[in-house]
Length: 396
Image 1 (cartoon, rainbow, N blue to C red):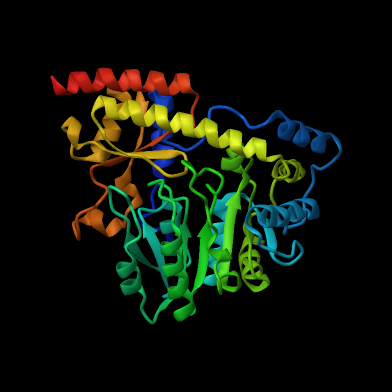
Image 2: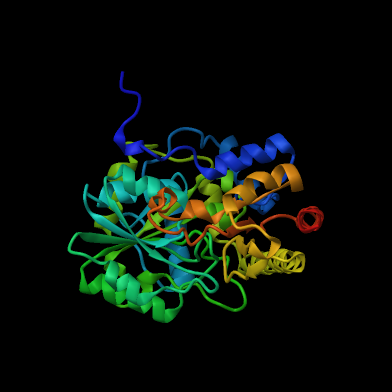
């Protein structure tokens, strides 16, 4: 009896499920998975409750309800000056993860090569594999994780059809700057590539930096499918309301795949997220200040403990090198941490090409660990106290 297909061979269980289960079993503080420990604004939650009471509990249109698609289009115009047609160039998805999966299934043929910035969110590997595509990783390296433009150019072959971007970048926290975006745009136009741009952390950028969608660059709006989500921006990750915007033909290709997956997404949450996207600038600036403070607390604390800390420009995450504490294997470190320190983190190793795990090349993330700072300050401080005790015992 056949028990699985080659499309899922080697994928296993996502590291986030494994480490979150370990956190629950041990009672450890979970700084692994990127979800906040506080909910978003009460007005958004009230809007969802009102939608339920008003009967928005049956299937929504597959492409999303009109008021949300209009709000997404208005958001793109408000923040970036992008003009998209809410009827043909916007689609609502069950989170950004589904949008990425549907985009790859709808735009990539078996054998097509997809360039992806490594380290990458683990669903990228799975979705490219499910689509029959071939990964062409371009590696971002510590300490600054900047884009190696020459390596990017070298990664393009006659079989390359797409670039899968992520900025602000998970797990490194790097934000693509103007020269880097321009280099990607030049390459995409020269080789007639489609760009799938994952921008879920678009409003989580720090220190005066600005997120720039690659679709705003000359010649890129017509070849870019931009993906984002409400979960990170409004601290409502469990609602799973995401979206994609871009040229009608790219949105249509994504929707052709999406319709046979979930077809539709959280009906009562959609009007609530439409409300959320219209919140005033004070909400977004307040979110930024709060996360900046949380980032600074965790980065300073980890540095004081002895970790080599790479301060992120955006996202929920900070990366550290564990070697100063006497460890050289991030996977082993993260597996022992819940039991010995009562804290969960994620090893970078899982965000790199799996071929490195089989000894074909050294994994650049082997000594790196990712920590989430989207937690209440008292939780971060408790986690740091536990890590101080652990580090002291380990170094005796």
